[in-house]
Image (tube, rainbow, N blue to C red):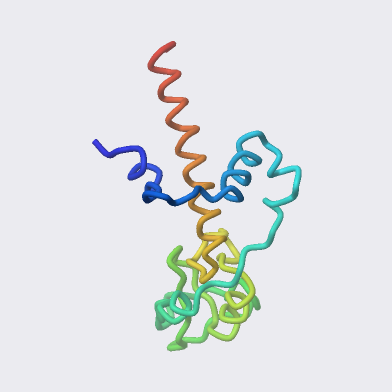
Length: 146
């Protein structure tokens, strides 16, 4: 069984090290719902990381793939090379690269790619952990009162 710090993805403080009071305040604001009132959830996501953009899979369009690019709405030509995101949506290279240079998500399904912004990545992990906590509480509640 993992300990508290492993479960939360944190490291304990070293001897003589002081806690980050700004981080504690941000967590407090989030936990009491004030984070939403401050508009912190409305901040636009940063661009996708350069490594994530370069690692996008290139696929060759076949005649069977009679699809259109969701950004420009032009049909893919046979034997054309397209970029495929991890969510399996395909785009023209000249359509998706400028998009990912502005934001880190798929224009169709909002699947997020990694970013180079450490603060945003930490925020994203906290959001995922909050969802996990809600599920854990629901399971605990159902096991006690179900």
